[in-house]
Image 1: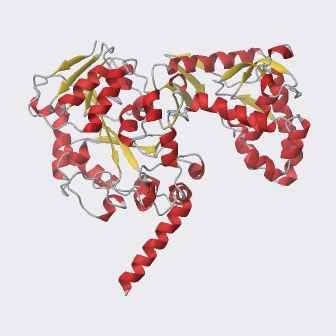
Image 2 (image 1 turned 120 degrees about the vertical axis):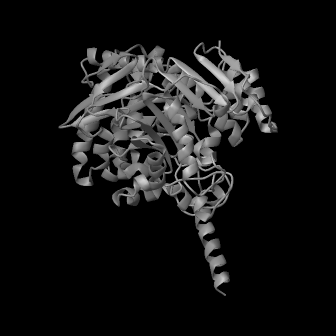
Image 3 (image 1 turned 30 degrees about the horizontal axis):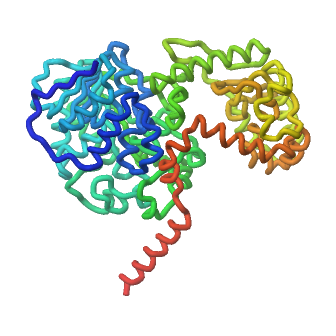
Length: 544
């Protein structure tokens, strides 16, 4: 069981109503499943402290198997559980006795967790740690002080707690983050345009250059910047200087804002210019900095984080040199990793080409494949290449039919959706990821990867529908969409299959649980235009 230590706690502070309610949620859900809470309570504070999406910040990071971790400012334990899963032992601290108690309640089953209430400076630890985490800690060290020295002095004090080969992990916003130029509010003062608009006494944001100055003054010799996007609070991607995003980043990322009404520019559309002009590292929304006295950094160069899915599929896809590695972000995702391996092996036994892979220490290890995905290939095709596109889709259809043995029509689990329709061949299993996003395509050859999701007794047409539906813009531009619908009997079933697709997606992407996040991500471009017009009017009035 997790253990609570209070002997070093000195000063009590008021407990807010929202903190009391979050503690009540933790107490009343001892299984640690807060889906019901997040569905009903749409407040940011509830989401921030209880949503699994937080876990992506450290869920991809490779810690030594025997790592001793010190977590400073654990709060209600949003990141504590994933740290326990990835290390030998976690010592978590929080200045609030109330939060420390809640953290222990939340992770009571963790045998490798000790939680201390109080300040680190009051605790006579003699232990040194392999990893120390500082999530939104450094900005609060000196109450907004402009000088960098107090922040450097604080980090220098932590060196005494760090093993010679140890790592300090610092997560915080970037003062020059792109989101602030787009109108996001300062997280500490709620001022528009972030800390660009002036000073505040509640927290201090730093630029990348300032972080470097602080680390050097603190005595650290080596450091490496990671760029969590859209930010460190709810990361969807991790990038580094060795693996910067593609200019198409804006098409796949979901920027969000809990106060979107103040935005004046759409963040996503600006990434291409930022990247093409070499400004991304300086203008990333937030930083995760790995620093220490040796240069033995984590090997991960970039990661895609599926933190919005059900726990079994909460998986990080990491690039590490010539390898591509899938890692479970949360413990239940070990099941999802096994399913990917099992499905890939099944497809290989059925005679399809799959990416080479091996299961190693609970991770799926694959070589990086030097070929575009079929989705990328389709997006680059022109109307003159319609025959090549039709041929590629025919190869995919043949692979779908080959992927699983047929079963009698009576087993069709989708038949009730359209009893009179021609459903065609029913497969004992359809692998829902057999779509162009999860297929390498080169010289007419299909190579499958990332085959984690499957359903029994479904029509082969459903899987081809998913392939067409996910690439509808590219296929429409080439001019083959209607022909594909007619050729494979999708026209009559289109609306039915579309409804089924939305239902299946909700099973894996938790749209009902994370509905508030998707609302925060739906920033209205018309509202942004209106905000720019308001600023123009105000500016004109000031000129008068």
